[in-house]
Length: 98
Image (cartoon, rainbow, N blue to C red; front, side, top):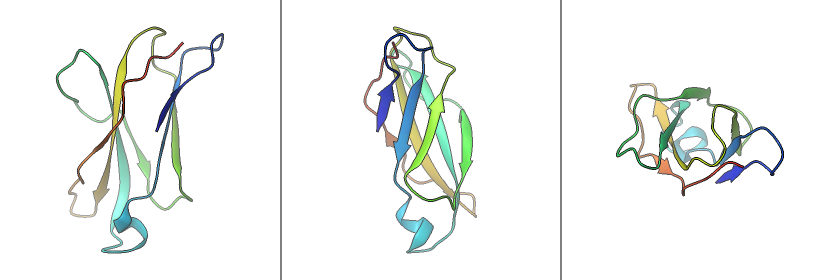
């Protein structure tokens, strides 16, 4: 889930996602969540923007203040385990901060 800020505030986007199945069940080996951001016009995601440690009460949340108003972004979140393999990424809809 991605939500742009309310109009009149500094531009930001809030991401929210559930815990991976393998964090609390399954293999129980999720170490972190990798957050990615790209411009809508970019064909692919580059390196992760940041990582969030696993083990927090879900849902996980991150507020991105490094965005520009009126610009279209796409986000993705991947769960990384101890091997360190990353799950298939959850990709957001396009979001435009105000």
